[in-house]
Length: 200
Image (cartoon, rainbow, N blue to C red; front, side, top):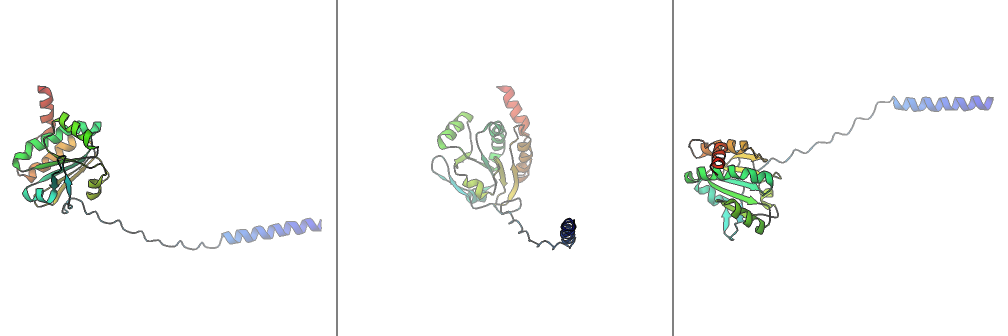
């Protein structure tokens, strides 16, 4: 019995020591300062990056040379079904404002042969290039496809529109910004594309 009492006493003493240890104030956690994210260099109000790419014929497309002449719409895109449905609206933007100085540049992610067939099928009438490695996406600091950059004459970024919108609403909003950039009435690209489809 004495052994049992000694065992119970030892057990109680151990339990009370453990509980006493738990009631001690915890050490404050070490404060780890989060590093602030590096500010984006490619954003609205910033100067467009130095960007050069070769077109399908091997001729260099130089963004700074283009923006010295007038505004430029750079579209980083692909030929997926969403981008394909949206393409008509961007072709309407190009057609509607090119005589007012807008240059449109489409940069595709697919291989040359696929893009060549796609461009021919869609009757694409704007500058285009192929970037299978995605270097243009790195230069413009985006991972989103498509992403559209409207750059004013002189090289300042006016608008960044990311994501795909087959309804044409994104393109319509971008058309409004292009119109302001070239100082003209806005072309309703949704209506233009709908009218063109109705004529076919």
